[in-house]
View 1: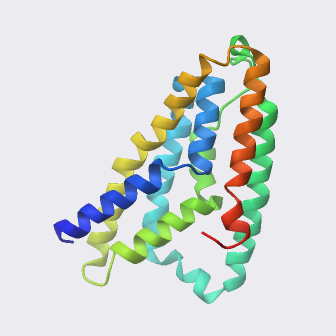
View 2 (view 1 turned 135 degrees about the vertical axis):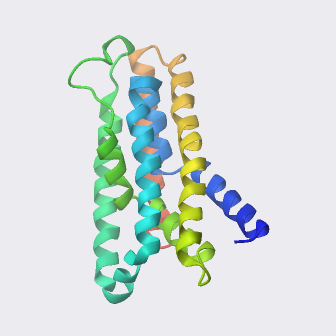
Length: 202
């Protein structure tokens, strides 16, 4: 992998990681509702889970969709259904700031966030594009490891910035009603992110 391709890979990793998507919107909501520290397992689950996803997709998992086209359809609609469920959870969370530590209100765990990558339409698009565009036929194993490491290094600070943004927004959302309105708005934006998936405009 030459320098030009490496720089292009880094740029793609940054732009795709920092732009809005299900992961970042959920992290922003988590930072707002639970604070930065309690959202750290969620952030690590996203970054490490997605890095592992790139390795497995690049190692041949994408061929499943070539051999079994129905698997892609099942994944698509299963992902949509789960994201709708998550949007409802975000919209109805709205714990007041003084009660975020109650047992009934919890952010996503590391494992939940890592597993979520496998039904996240944006994550699939990013992984498939990265492996198709930057792994290549020459030295595929080495290039795949480079792609995975670049995404791992860039993804974590990128997604963390969304959680931090949520924490900063919390200063203006001390009123439970404002927090409720924020969560409903975040859920609607999350649902809006499904538009290109449903209508195949990704």
